[in-house]
Amino acid sequence: VQLVESGGGSVQVGGSLRLSCKASGATFWHYCMGWLRQAPEKKREVDATIEANGQTTYADSVVGRFSVSRDNSKNTLYLQMNSLKPEDTAMYYCAADSLVQWRCARASVPDFGYWGQGTQVTVS
Image 1 (cartoon, helix red, strand yellow):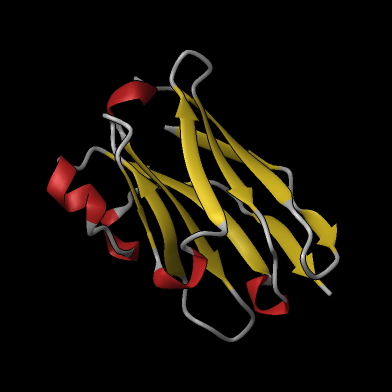
Image 2: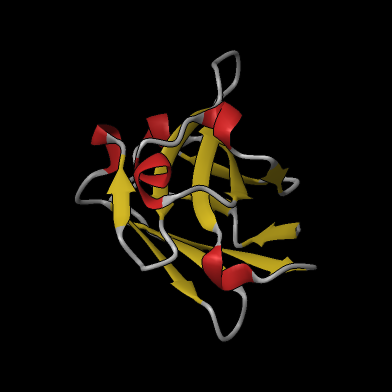
């Protein structure tokens, strides 16, 4: 699976961004997909996951502000980020793996075998 993120950039506090992740090379629709972030000098962490059936799970820090979705017809994953804070500044990665539903909802960094190159989000 090849994953390519886009949509990052610089935004003011309280602003919004929409990240996209285009997948190719495999059957996208049945993969567990995730958005993860890595801030400078911090460990990579999961922000949100979405199962093949569309069920979503979010980290506490983004609940109510971020929304993950997928368009299987376009092989594309999205992350709508609202009410952005300076602490959201990070490199954001799209990730995928063929995880069963309960694993997807509880997925952590090592569970994902496929990664994009990342897209930078800066909030100031």
